[in-house]
Length: 335
Image (cartoon, rainbow, N blue to C red; front, side, top):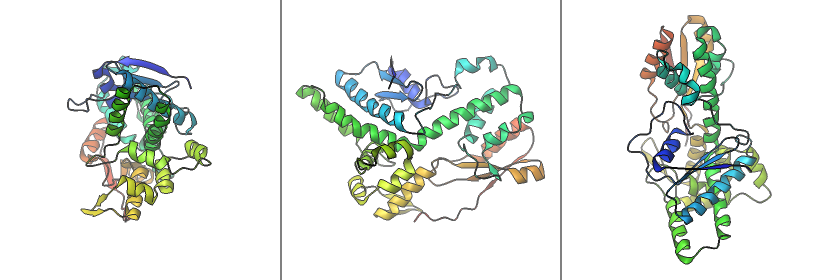
């Protein structure tokens, strides 16, 4: 598969890593963000591999072996193989810089765009709903909505396959690295890099370690099918075995109670990967009946805090009328 390599500075690679793709508009890296990123693999047609200028020879081989795994995965996976980098970049929208509330509009719509698909004919994803009402927007806003939707679909596909993608790359890199003619000191450096990759965090998941363990459970006969058609929550449901559970030693905390038994952890992980973002939908019937935009939302404990009041205020400033939010009632138990 064709790909590009670009060598960049430490600061540049950190920016790309934080933003999600090169020159993405309107996001700034926090000063206290991670300062050790070996590479960024940017999915596009063709993909681009951004490498840290300060790589040692071993780090270069290590990173390229990992990226070879990414290339194999995205070349087969149905969600990723035709994905193109979004166009919402600074140079693309610089003609809009004079418009009032440009950043407010982009940031607000990006928040709403995390829900990319309609729930049904009653509950519509916000961006799909807005795109169906072009008369409610100025031309520049409508154009931005299309770019924001494009960007949301891009990140959604990546998020839904992140565990599989990183796990496959980690699994494949081992076989690729074995083919290299490395000195003893280089092999020791490689062992150190491998160990760092598999360190379990105090909180959260190590996608590399868990993903690799899951791929080891996939039979040779099923490999192509899984590569092509699955996504993370299905991958967990099928391949999170008791062997993986014992190896990864994962526990979950639900309502302050710790669970580490196989079935509880598997159910939680499946739920986690299926519902990674807050769900926001336009209640089309209520909006039509009342004349006021009404948004229903579903917020799970694993999500980052959804700032409803802030989002409501931003939308009311954009639309210059009241906007209403109402939570879904959700009584499903993970346990």
